[in-house]
Image 1 (cartoon, rainbow, N blue to C red):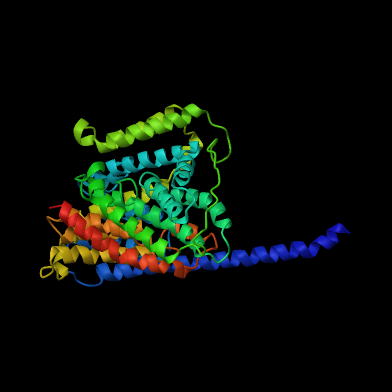
Image 2 (image 1 turned 90 degrees about the horizontal axis):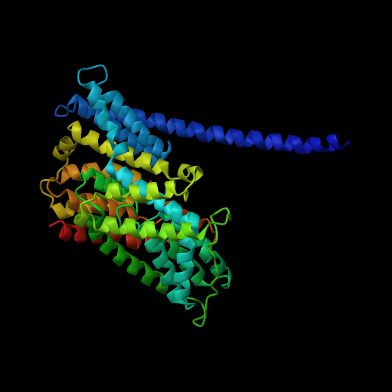
Amino acid sequence: MSDQTDLPQVSDERAEARSLYGRLEIRRGKKGALAAAAFAAAALVAYAPRHESLPAAGRHGLFILVVAAVLWATEAVSAYAVGLLVMGLEILLLGGLGRDGGEERWIRYLQPWSSSIIWLLLGGFVMGRAATKTGLDRWLAQTVLRAFGTVPSRALLGLMCVGFVLSMFISNTAAAAMLLAVVAPVVATLQPGDRLRKGLLLGVPAATNIGGMGTLIGSPPNAIAAGALGGSIDFARWILFGLPPAILLFAVSYLWLRRAHPPSDPATRLVLPRIAPDGDAGGEPLPAWRRYLVMLVFCVTVALWLTSGWHRTPTPVVSFLPVVAFAATGVLRPQDIRSLQWDVLLLVAGGLSLGAAISDTGLASWLVQMLPTSSVSQGALALAIALAAAVLSNLMSNTAATNVLVPIGIALAPGFEEAVAVPIALAASSAMCLPVSTPPNALAFATGELTARDFLGLGVLLGILGPVLAVAWCAFVAR
């Protein structure tokens, strides 16, 4: 009897499963059509016109560039997969396989995977994972928030300071997720409709997005720009480029949020939760020595990065310190290593490989000849490309946008490469107009407290001010 009564439920579940599977197939079909359209469009652009001044290798480079740009823009294929596709197409079309010299030429497009920038990012990812596992990030958030007090304006400043500093050294996505978990109980104590609720939640993505501008490991676009410049910018020099604009944008964001989202009652005082970092994300107790070791290694690594000009140890070599220390002492287990952001590393490697192809094939010089840049000043050119990076980064991955624009910007500004490439990366991190613009935006939007319109005001302000500040400051520093 019970079997018969369960039949309708089983039938409904099967029908729902078929419906979900059908929608999945439609979605896959759309993505497949977009991918096919990307290849078709790239073939038309690269091979249909004569392009008499462009060599055959340059045509192949143009084909790969257009394919990557369209796939990154449409997200028909995962961003990291596009990076792998770029390297694969370069090996196939430009690697000289089966021809004299092909044995060494194809290696050129795989070398970015083992470049110094990749190791620098890996060191940053390892430190971020160790800080999260030992609870140092949560401890820092709790300590700073309590130090700033319960006055809303001060608490907002403390919250944003934590996000800003953390995202300079760990993933801004991880920093935003942790801070949203900390601030959620605080928001819950406020009355529904209180504008401060939105102000606190918007402060998290604003601070974590901007903070990533400040260091070389803070955001993948930074690493892409530094890698494309051939190692002329180390950890300390990037801080000189990126931190001052980031601090100014941070101040603007704080003042805007404080003014646009004040508490409904000026006498409001926040209730701050107590969060004890007594274990990893799964609640497993951790020995205290591991937390102290992470603090020590973190401080020593950052100090060595900042003083590499004195002790002459390259910053990528310093990155081995946290990797080796945390692996050898068991702070990070195999599952922790597997959870690192390998997809980001693959995406960055693909972008660096794309830049190498654009330069090696003559495509870069051809683009310079095609564009009317002779009558445009270097500052105007840098600002135009930086604004383009901000616009594109609101609609697609900022890493992907940087991958496409940095090689073009460097080609368009010979002799002023730093003053163009660095603002592109900084402008890409200032794009936050939409909930989907950055992962921290999406996490804040997922709380259900915010609407798409809530991101627009601050996003437009930073999207315009960010490129302008970046171009002006980088031009001053690069002189």
